[in-house]
Image (cartoon, rainbow, N blue to C red):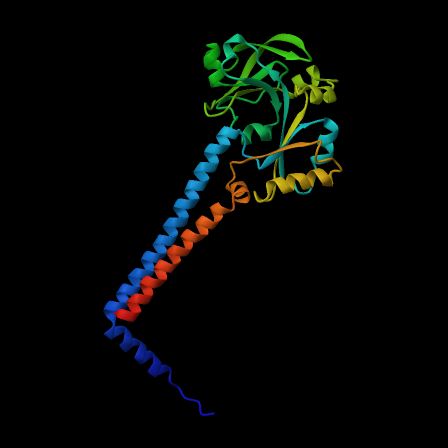
Length: 293
């Protein structure tokens, strides 16, 4: 085989081609840039819309976690909490509802929640701290406005509620205040771990389940490695923990767009189709430039 060095010839032809087709090449470069900008703009706008929708829906749901296990007894919680699929977790324990007549128009729940739940579920106080003492409480400003209490920490707040059909009227000290959200379905007030250990000690959790009071039952909120197939992962955790799917109530955070795609795959087809139209348009634009110019 005879070896030839035609690199110089190829370079000369390329330069001549570029020199004599300056108009076409400029149009081609501009077309490529515009197509790239079109792709970038599409993905940026699309992702921005998805994130905004997710965030607003999370505000309504009241949590950023992927999903959760509801109304767990302590025994069920202990079996589930250390599952390898769970990457992050937070707990909430329901105590009761505030029955003050002033709060009749907006459901107001009284709960205990750990630090992870409060900080990742829109309840982080902008004044004060998370409750530590038995009679300390974290409240939202909507509840304070309704009860006409100044938005200052260390104020007193009286709440009427029931535990096991027994009525309580307790005065709490406000340790923290968080920003209430009117798009949320209810206001949530948070007491301390010390209150739970003292007032809910020995609570009959099975009775709470049967009567649907929820008092003393645990809500375990979890994050997985990603937000795909949340319900399947929740079910897998239950079965791996040796529990019955029919006995454990679960909930998924429908704020995540991946859950909507799973339920309605046609939405994904629309996105893919629109993306295909953009790609085809860019290809035809550049192709026509090289053919006809």
